[in-house]
Length: 261
Ligand code: GLP
Image (cartoon, rainbow, N blue to C red; front, side):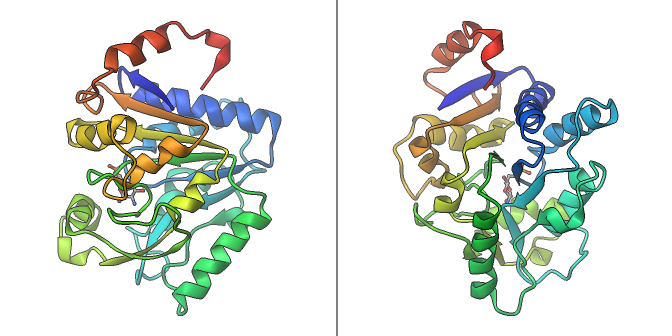
């Protein structure tokens, strides 16, 4: 696991954007794993700037999103499918038939979950997976207690997560669905490279557990310690509870520029 303590969200966006740009430069039909929420937005802004400057063509990629609320109608403004299309895939010119989101409005959710896994497998798996981090340590919507081997399935959201996300529902926690369809921790572990972004003091405990805590379903993100290629991009506030922060800073400062994440 590589930990980079960034000056700000813009630097996080640039570093993660560079990973995607390099990948797509050598593999125009790469498979991107996309996250929603505020954390990946600087990455999408960076990618769109590259696209607009003519330095990057995302038209050949496929995307798979991590999760979706259950029960929101197609096109709901707070739905993750709407969000990802607005934030990245539509402006980047990625054809909508290659933009995949777990179908939270499916009638048969277990069947839809199994089908989502099959679609990811048929696409050849995810090359780069972007991740945010919940204040309770969740990744995607894998709340505490999630099986470390879990696959795409329905989960119940914690009250804390619904409160955190109420800002996308006009501040009304009761408008936030109680359930979601989410990739599992075992699904996420299969991505070839994982890039996680977290900012703010409210993420500091979860970030410290992720990087330095014991692997445990209590803090689901800790499962990433089992992954061979993870880049954790934190701002100073999110890194404020790391015991070994100085070591991560020295390591990053001494890293040859050509190496990338
Ligand atoms: C949501 C999403 C996660 C996201 C997390 C953090 O619950 N399901 O994928 O990583 O919240 O969100 P944010 O980046 O807005 O803090």
